[in-house]
Image 1 (cartoon, rainbow, N blue to C red):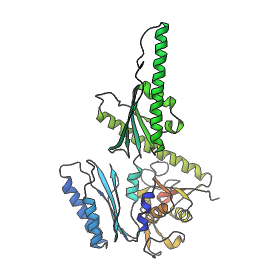
Image 2: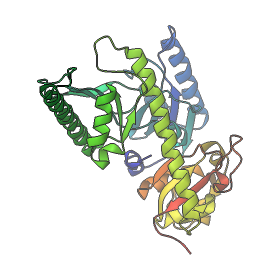
Image 3: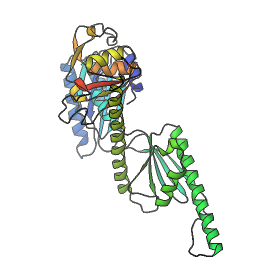
Image 4: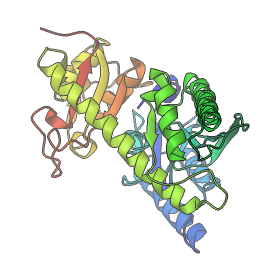
Length: 372
C-alpha cells in the first residue's frame, strides 16, 4: 500500500502512542463492547509508560462514532501534539495493538489496509447506458454517482429477414455500440481520476461491447461481476455479494503479481530478503516495494546502530536498543516513498508463517535499481 498518509506522522516528535482497536457496531451491545475494549487499551498504554493526557486523547478518539454501521477497526496514533493519525478499516482481520514506542506501530493496520482493494467504480450497464457509483474502497458507501444516457431510438432489434428489417437491425447494432462507447468514455474519465478497478455487470451484450470498445487503460481494470444488473428490482444483496467476491479476487491477483515480480527480480539481482538487507536497502532509498509477512516480521528484532543509514525515530537518538524490526522498516519505507505489500502467497510465506525461500525474517524488497 501507498504510505504517503504516514509521512505526516513522522514529522512529529515521538514517542508515539499507537492503538488499533475493533470498533465494530454490528451487535446490540456494541457501545458497551467498544467502551470495554478502549478502556483496556488505555490501561495497557498507561502500563507501558504513556502519559495519561496522551492516553486520554487516544481513548477519546477511539470512542468517537466512525459512521460505519458494521465491522470496523480504528487506527489512532498520538503524541504530545495530540492525535496525529486516524483511519478506519472495514472488515479488519488483524489483532488489536497498544504501543508506546519511539516509532509508530502500524504493521497490523497496514496488513488490513493492504487487504482492501482500493477505489472502485461500480458500473451497472444495459444497452441504453449505465449507472456509475464510485466507492473509495470496498466495502463502503458510494461517495459519488453518475449516469450515462445513450441513444434509445432503434434500441430494439426486430425479427424478420427483409432488407428493411436487416437495415433496422444494423442501425440498432450501431446504436448499441455507440452507447457502449459512451459508457467506456465515462469509465475512462474515472480511471484518469485514480480508480484502480472497475466492477462491471448488467446486460450480457452491453458488457461484452464495453469490453470490445474500451481503451486499454480501462480494459485492464475491468472486473466482470457474476451477477447484478441495472434493471428495477435487481437485488442489492446479491450485488453486494458479487462485489465482495470480486474485491477478494482483485486483492489476490494484485498480491500474486507482486509475488511473481519478487521472484523474477531475485533472478536479476533486483530484490533482497531479510531484515538486515532490507533495512540497508531502505537506508539508500533503493526500495520500491517492501513485501512483508506481518506475523513473522513482528517477531524479529534489530538495532539501528547496525544500520547507520537508517535515521533514529523522531525525537530519539537511541540507536543501541533493540526494537521490533517492522517499526523502522515501515517508517523508513514511508520516508523514502516505498510501498508496503502484504504477501499471501504460500510459496513465499507458508500458512505456518515460517519464512519462505524468498521472504526471510518475514520481509523482502523489490529494488528501484539492482545490486549485483
